[in-house]
Image 1 (spheres, rainbow, N blue to C red):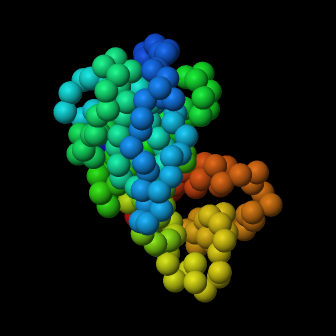
Image 2 (image 1 turned 45 degrees about the horizontal axis):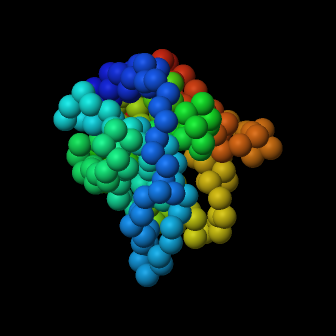
Length: 211
């Protein structure tokens, strides 16, 4: 699979998609969201689902909480009906915080661990993703290059350092792999940390270090 070609194609589709007015989610009875024994009715958001088996793009209403448990349910704005999509048919999902001009989050099928992965940062075929349905801290985030997938977080590291967030273990990864002395204070957000990793990995690749 040429991941970079797929990403570029999806980016083009995102740019070409017109704004849409989705059906009002409040007028439709959504099935409850279940996670283990927990039942809830989380917020409903506008979104697009890009399919792998066809050129069609499904647009409508999505619950971001469903994506996190591997339930790809969408209320199609064209047919006003629910559709449940299989992961194998999905290339990417974009979920908007409000209307289609607002902040959005992208999720990609990188064909790894049977899950969609949230995109944190990407440049020139290198990207950092987070698992939308992690079973443990280990393997929750990966650095994807044209050559391999590299785990950014490790279960034992979480236990030994008692990490409460992502930034500290990501900084440790930076120190070990790129031999730099940056600290959390050098970054404003986790997004900035991930962008830094992508930049440093691209530098490694350009210098001939591909492992």
